[in-house]
Length: 289
Length: 270
Ligand SMILES: Nc1ncnc2c1ncn2[C@@H]1O[C@H](COP(=O)(O)OP(=O)(O)OP(=O)(O)O)[C@@H](O)[C@H]1O
Ligand SMILES: [Mg+2]
Image (cartoon, rainbow over all chains, first blue to last red; front, side, top):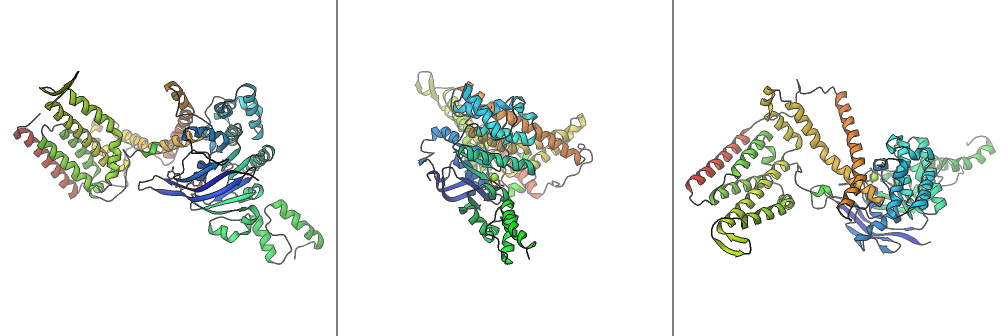
């Protein structure tokens, strides 16, 4: 697999030289391969959002380099805008960026900046709306008349429409109802599997990340604490607890069952998997113990 | 980023200047402005400068921040002092085309520069050491006599403190929205003036929308806590004049007296 994104010893300091100085990201290095789905976890204030904003050059690292396709994105600061079309970024609470008269025009803002026109533009907008599950009827409405969940979708569509090679989502499901979360998440996975783009997903919901991510980045106090395959990360539940995180409930239940000597596999991450593992046992004896 | 500007920021602290009564600080600030513009010779200027220096040192705030606040106005200072330099009256000591430099011009340039710098330093000292709440509280108390002519003192003060409270919030929000639009490829750094103004629309509209939303929220929150204007309202932090304030008034009175005496008796005015 080829590496699309590499961070070399990245640090970021807020308010340098003031009494409010804060080292939000501290010496972080990692590599991400093309087409990977990466989950990003960490307690509040661990520097996830700051780290994500450095991936597309919205903020410039105080130290270190960000390499996109092997090239330093800050080599030519004047051309930083072109990086933003390659690395799409959906912010925490993105609905506050809506501004156009209609949802359609708002989604078109990004691809227009990229230089798309006519049919190409129309196709990009409609595909993005479809990926996020926005009904075509909504496209002609004012973005301010949408419900919270619909606004969220419109804002995400506005980034997806630029067709970035790497899509970064900063807590896209925060504040949505369970159903809305579920749907949005499955749309993101569908987007990932159909377009084969690289996706980074920041989330506080372990269950979500466990279900979709290939590998997981764990941040702790600005430092990179882990970057491992999903199953491996959740196997180290004690370590996660030290970083203020928890393994998904179902993983915890299954590992407790294992401790009791019941023959279930290790590192079960989703309820579906657990169901499949438990079913034969239940069929055999009618009860677990 | 917009937030890097040091001017007008509050740095919490426990220095003597921090602990002065905010009313005393405001009154002294006003008197100081008047006196700065009434210095007519170098002796008087030296006295006021010494007074400024004294307060800056007592404020215990790093000189770095005072320099930073001066950086903002450096062009205004340069421009006005140059203008004064070339427009003095009297015999020229150097001349080229329409530009001529006179002794009078040099003196005037020095005075203007020192006055503007003192003004900025003093106002920075005031805002660095006084929290916005203290400031508006003090202004409300100082304007209380205006109630006699039915001036809505409390309401104005409340509006001021709300406005001050939301300046950093709005700046932060502007930053966030700008980041989000930049992430969608918005180009705000290049192009001609017309293009740049147009590029602001994607920032201004969400900013206004959220400012209105915030205003509604604050109003609702205030109503929920039974806010109904100033009548009968007490405050959590009472402000009191203490010996510190009296002493600083005396020092200021000495400075004023000194400046007046210098203006009368030192015969070396410009
Ligand atoms: N604009 C800013 N100015 C100063 N400090 C900031 C700023 N933004 C974030 N910080 C600080 O940097 C640290 C990291 O913040 P960041 O937003 O990256 O955290 P996060 O991991 O995304 O948290 P959350 O899960 O709550 O979104 C925090 O301690 C925060 O207080
Ligand atoms: Mg965050």
